Amino acid sequence: MKNIIITLFLLINCSVFAQKPCEIDANISDSIGTYKSTKQYMIFERSFAGNSTNIFFSLTNTNGIIGIDVQVLQRSQDFIKAMCFNTSSKIYLQLQNGKIVNLIHNDNDDCGTFIRDDQNGNNRILTGSFLFSKDNYEELKSTNVIFMRIRYASETIDYPLKTGFVSELDKKMYEPEKYFMDFIKCVEN
Image (cartoon, rainbow, N blue to C red; front, top):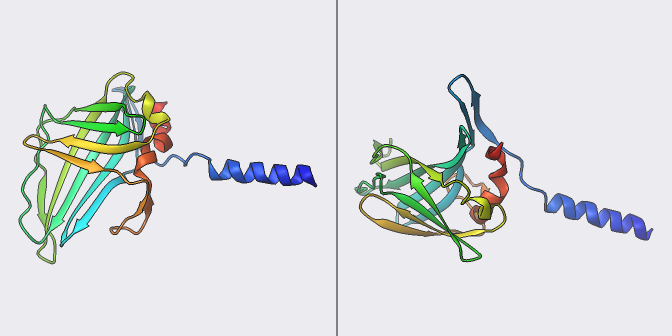
């Protein structure tokens, strides 16, 4: 009886602490090279006084180079100023162990797209690709990310990451601090 209880306990622990399954959005291999990306995952959400900001990450592997596609979605009834990515743009990820991982912008300059919705609301969508240096993402496999700083073309904005939250946008549960621990394995191979 004691062995059955121990076995049951171990099985429950294994299922609770198991890694999340990979959700691949694209997996392309042709004569030009290879490209793999995960589905978008919400890393940050802020909603206050009719204004909202959502930031989504998608991990990518392009010919063996690991990176992140970032999408910043802003919504407001008021005017939304343009934020741009350029060659000096970077993302800084502060880990729980105090280390900082830097990502550099890999795309052309981009100031996003302005869209008006059917309720006369203003929406701005900014996208960009950022790359890790050769091996600076190794720490992300085992340490939570607690803080993110994005250097845009004209300003730098800090985004504290939450352990977990239920999004107002789609009512799903997100765990941004563990994003890399859960999903970086999906694009490594």
